Image (cartoon, rainbow, N blue to C red; front, side, top):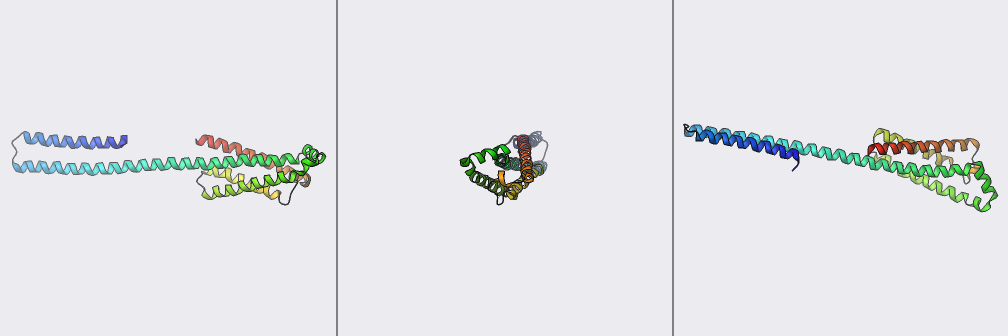
Length: 211
């Protein structure tokens, strides 16, 4: 039994005992006929019934408050777990976009041109990044469909979804972004890389404040 329930039970029990003691003292005081004794007994019974009803309401009220508290804690825990998933996706997306961005850096482009073996691995690396981004997009869509996050967290998730969509769209038909991206595409990729890191940063702060 919780402390609050125990408190209500103690109050009701004490009140009942006080009423019973009062009735007993009145009877022992004497001078009362059987009719008066019956009236006192009826009053004691009525008061006891009222006390029992009040106790029942008190217990139900306490149980409802406790259930609501448990429900709120559980909802809060689920929101934190859900947004932790978004944070992990943001971290993975940052790594993947960073990898793409490095492939577009002039020094890296030249290095791969001079090393045919390294250059031949570029298509495979891009494909792995593409799969990571697609996987994060699908997982993020599932998380957003479930919801169960506050508005601030949803805004971070929507922003991440927009970034992932833009990057995957820019990769359509691209095997070697270092050679195939024009200057505008490379600048846009750099911007998306920075935006993804911002989402990761603010998502991490949100998770830290929620725990």
